Length: 168
Image (cartoon, rainbow, N blue to C red):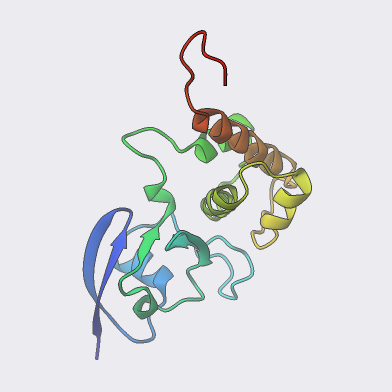
């Protein structure tokens, strides 16, 4: 017997009946058609299914859909706003941080969460942050470059604007 849950997904409140054993990744992909969240390993090792749950990167294959009742979930489809890519998405494209693209959604979400908590990371901190996301194609060098580039973009755009001739 299913249970009704209400969850906000990419800014839209949804009420769905879910089975007690249904994983969040299954709700996203199979019920809602949000196929940007990938299933890569079925063992929670690869990170391809990573989404934000209440602002924290979460492997959606490790959480039941019923556990997200009342939560806010953001998938890779929810990163762009008003047709404009998120800075992390722009950085991944400009730094050539993707090849086959299978791991990319999980890495993007992981980077968004990480940069929200650490806006000026070192390369070592970036590498540690993405340890739970496996990529079989890139060797990670360009991914680290992309996260660093996104951090710079986000820090630059977050600076308060100063009127001409006014010193801080």
